[in-house]
Image 1 (tube, helix red, strand yellow):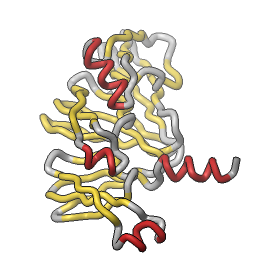
Image 2 (cartoon, one colour; image 1 turned 90 degrees about the horizontal axis):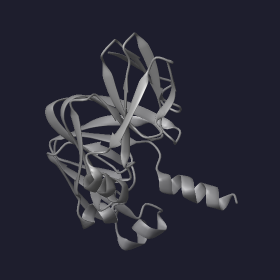
Image 3 (cartoon, rainbow, N blue to C red; image 1 turned 90 degrees about the vertical axis):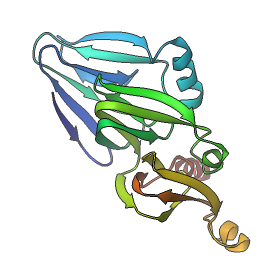
Image 4 (cartoon, rainbow, N blue to C red; image 1 turned 45 degrees about the vertical axis):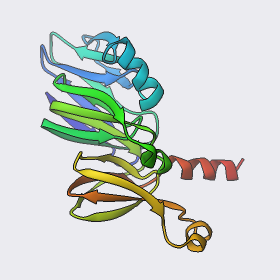
Length: 217
């Protein structure tokens, strides 16, 4: 399966070139266009109960679509908001995603949900987190550009900018500085990520977009 991520970082979309018998799984409503020979099979996102949990707590659709074809074909997959799309390849490994970040994956990738804790909720990442594991490629998206950073000890991230992180990374929420500078300096709360591993950040956040829109209405 050949996959090309195009129009990065502002309006990224994924062109999937399927060979006969190959499949790709995507979140409901992620397909932008496809060849006429492509067949779609819709199913629950991990069973009825798990699908409901992913919808309520993980920001994901209760259904996923499986695309396949008996001849060479293509599928274009995208996300609702303008922004970047990142691809990672899992080799029996795990990655945590912020709610709503998952877009598509190969059949060997499993999508689950787990408790993230009140620290994550206060930090703007939600009470629950999406957990992807298994073997294969996975595509996730964010508002704005996505960039990767290797953490070896501690790193500070503004709330709402953390997209994904490895299980070896731990989160702790706190003030950006003193009480005065934290609230009057515009930074407020920050997330301290600790451990050794990779994190993925987005260059924009939803709260900033919401504040900008509200200021111009």
